[in-house]
Amino acid sequence: AITISSVAMAQISVGGPPYGLRTGLSLQNVPTVHAAPFDAAAVAVEDSIGKSNGRLPMYGRVLDVNAGLNDAGLWTNMSDGGRVWRLRVTSIGALATELFFADMFLPNGASLYVYSEDGQQVLGGFTTYNNRDSKAFSTAQILGASSIVEYDEPAAVAGQGSLRIVSVGHAYRMVGDVQAGACE
Image (cartoon, rainbow, N blue to C red):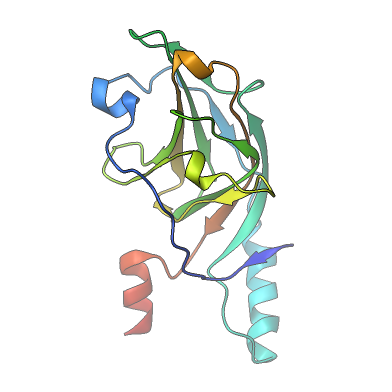
């Protein structure tokens, strides 16, 4: 199993609400992809062995997901001729999730957002500024077992963007208030 550690990352974004939240698009028909199952028993054994070997505790594990713009999600046409793609990513039992992308290319004018289902926590908009030669990208945590991924694409760059969600960080402890409580 691959493990993840807590690393602070600066994520440059333009802010502002994504189209779906700004216009009140319903999440009811947004498809859901599920991460590979989280094996709590196996993780407990791994964590116990790690602790006895003096390793710092892990807060989560990386689980496989495989979903991209062309094979998952829901496209919605916008009134200005652009399109919005949305997908719900769920890791059952997670206290928080973080997403790992591959093959990410955001053309000029396009934006990527990741947000909680209630819209209270929003990451993004990530733009062409966030493109990397490696085409890899990851997000900070979104509290809860699910997050919504939204890609907003203007008509002028239709079909030019790409992204694939390849894995999800499944946080099972030391998250938000849970982390503070565990330390006290």
